[in-house]
Length: 231
Ligand SMILES: [Zn+2]
Ligand SMILES: [Zn+2]
Image (cartoon, rainbow, N blue to C red):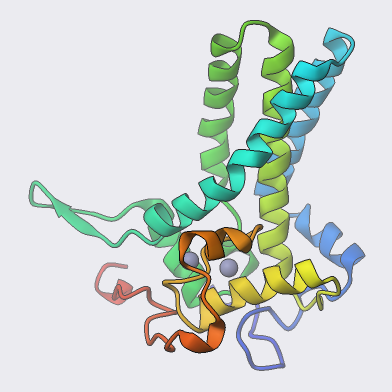
């Protein structure tokens, strides 16, 4: 996939034609399937919840819960699933599709299509999670609220990961930290800085040391797997 090219700044992180304004980034973001699917799911869950009637304290709790869990969830999935190397099980080579796609993203970080979650994941996960929420929670209200919280934080994750791979320059201190954390993960050492949205999680879990104290890794691009042998 070579539709876009490394940035003119030569860091290979963002495409030279990627947005450099917030408005441009929003317009570009919603051209990709994953954000569109998540936004549709979010609007559907929110509309259904509002249709059910007045909101209460239970809804606030249900919306907030996924937001509280997400930072740890994304760190865990990034570290243990997306970076999982192929392994052999009962004589068969197992290479998870998520991990393969993430290696492609590390190899060519400037290609936007490789930044986003695969749409097929949403087509399986969204109905499954919706069925679980309505089955496990006592009434439809909290179920719709928890799904609203989940789809909104998933969309925020997609947005954050997308925007750090554009030419936008972060302004706030928090945004600068988020951008730097992910850049370090791509270019300094892929064994650190797993958080996409909440860098202090890396500090807390021992994967967010001072940048200068971590040696440069030779395998940031490949994650130590020679995909040329198994295209
Ligand atoms: Zn990335
Ligand atoms: Zn990674």
